[in-house]
Image (cartoon, rainbow, N blue to C red; front, side, top):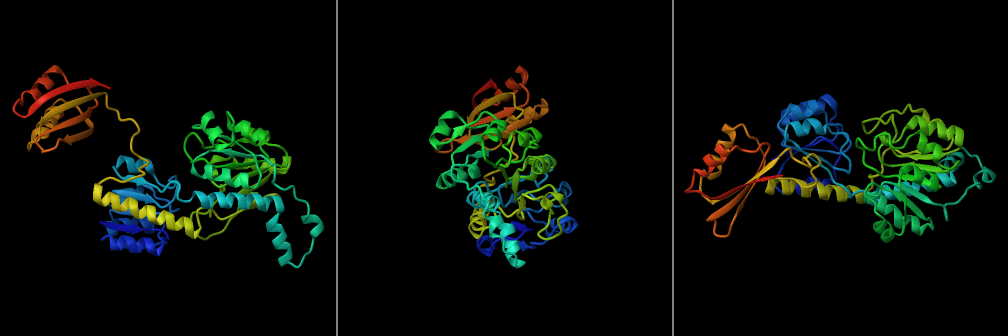
Length: 400
């Protein structure tokens, strides 16, 4: 198998893949048309990216069967096109959780103590201890978490170390789990906004979370409170945030923002960073040596398993529920052509097989095939399949 790595990737990970017998094309600066051309010319089976955008045109350009996002998200990949072409899309969830949580607290402290302004004035030779002595402190302040995945969970022990009580909302959060974590559960993001002195957002970007943090949310936050976003820019209404900073004295620490460049270098022309009380970083939440090493190891594991088992872990574009309406269970002798004859009868009847699994018993004499169908076969089709009595032991049809 050939792997095209189109983003920076640790040398140890490249070495591990080489050692595993993969052919590697390492071109970490590929973007846009150049990446499309490389996918086509390299005839790569597997594409590895970090933040680089993978478009439908790229996925259609070559013979890719697997795209690995060496990170937690996958919003930069055209998953719809990948699914239509039968290309696995995988990611490395949880491997950067500690790094992102560390940055979130760094932004929190930087907002509270105005560290960037402090440092900037000293570089300019300006001493203003009187001004910069005005800090609230975060001990005893309430941290509100929107989202309680792996990163959100990493925020909890760090908050407790700083003496901060925690309130949180997540669609999956239940009272029993909240009690185990030692936090207070809220029923909605709006309740978190109302109760917290600092809000930190840790949700994946999807149709449910796009625009989740809106004008109502910012208006519900306490005047002068802090807002931290290290998840995705599209989760928050940036115009509403800017207005809340101007009108209600909110402070914001952003690792992601609406005008973020797609490449590793570039220019930023986003007015939000001109506002007093807003600081930003360069989408570096996962960019620690520790996190990148963990992500590299997970990427190698995904690719190795794909090579050996024909399927990849952490796939994000497998249907959660297939269109199958019926399950055909065929107990049969483990002989050549038995299932081929079953599928042939289904094909003639215009019935599509959505999923299939063939379980072979010890000794390889008999097996059971579980075949998920999008339509119920007629009595005639069932009898035609049963007609192969020398190979079919028993057959049943179940409605799903």
